[in-house]
Image (tube, rainbow, N blue to C red; front, side):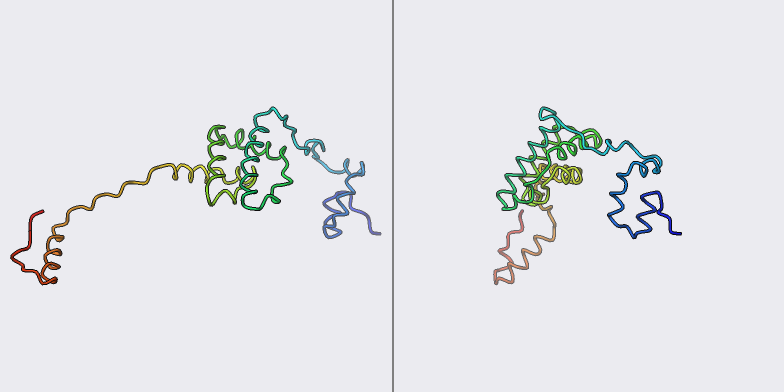
Length: 179
């Protein structure tokens, strides 16, 4: 006699991982069979008010990314962006990753201006994933390049110049040996 395994995991394994098994979890007896199940409502996404800092950060970055996307002709890639998801990524960047809000804004501004990164970072999720790399690159670009050092004096330079003087058919006695 072939019995139906009670747990979703067992049913999925038995049936080869069919998606049909996922809808079986709606049956209340299946929920009782699953141990250590968390409250189903915890999987809902947190709602951010439009006045929240994280939502405002998401909107700010979205507007900057939108301008870049429109300019590059790829606005279709961000058309369906979810601002709640973006706000949550901003929250994670600040709270979990410990990034200062002012630094986050500086990187948002920089990344949407940088010729390479502006088309490679088109979401808050990607900004968060690449944040440390972007901040380092931004700071490296801000530092002025080291001025080229004046070449140090090499005593052989005069000898080389003297050899060229002779090769050009000049009189060796007329060569200026002074610095």
